[in-house]
Figure 1 (cartoon, rainbow, N blue to C red):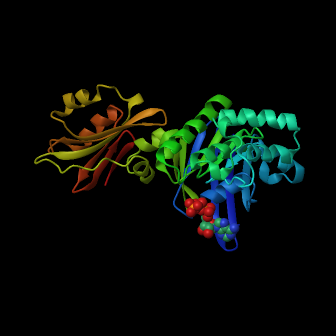
Figure 2 (spheres, rainbow, N blue to C red):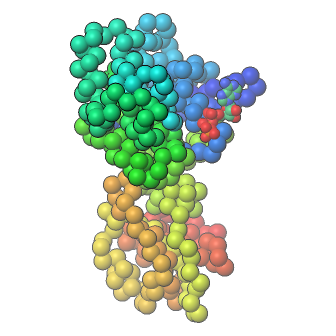
Length: 338
Ligand SMILES: Nc1ncnc2c1ncn2[C@@H]1O[C@H](COP(=O)(O)OP(=O)(O)OP(=O)(O)O)[C@@H](O)[C@H]1O
């Protein structure tokens, strides 16, 4: 478990992290997203104590890392494995030697190191590349070795800082599958720092958006994508292109998570609202739930608040589009008029 509270980091006159509160439960996969310069990597470095926070606490496995020093801190750090962008492998060492490095530093015996390196390479499906040098490996393979090295000291927490950046979609998918497997099989808690929304959709349970050193939006991925009027929601699941409204129809944008909505919602909505034209639709697996985004057309003379409450009762967030923008925002997340 990672419990971050009031985490602040100041460099000179610049406040890079400004009172971050964030908790990742055991075995959970959390993603931190945000624009370049938002403070994501600084957050990662404060969590593994490569940087000392200016204020606040970082509690991992019940211990406040910021309060530790010397040997205690080194021991506590073993709880946290880190995987960086492009893996940062040492060029002159083979894959197996790179994985062995943290164990050698820690003074484990040769036989134990060999046994663990074999296990780790097998786990990341790289046993057959044990004696290859980094230059002889693909980007995805280097990341697998980086992950094996991150797991060398059997951490309970793995930080992945842009671990899939620059990888092709196939390698990204396989690394995400590997990370999810680590959580499922070993119970490792994962904090994934990324600018790739595909990664968040693919593996995260919760997501936090960092901007100018603050968390500006946060929640379970399924809750966030169902939110109306949420920048993070729109970034995570952009709406399919809005079709031109057919003559005489009002356009409504709908969002729903399939696990809380009846599979027969469309006919039920139509039974109450009359003719309902399906103009665009996209469903996607997010956080283990199927999430749908649709644009439908309805009679424009219908009362907008009634329409919204019909959808709300079905568990669907509905927004009326007016002149290309969103007019009335209402539905499962509450009701506001714009
Ligand atoms: N050691 C440092 N000294 C001074 N400023 C720093 C230091 N490290 C980072 N910063 C500043 O802190 C801000 C956040 O940097 P950080 O690398 O955490 O952002 P990021 O969200 O990871 O960005 P990116 O996505 O581009 O990697 C930046 O403005 C950066 O210039």
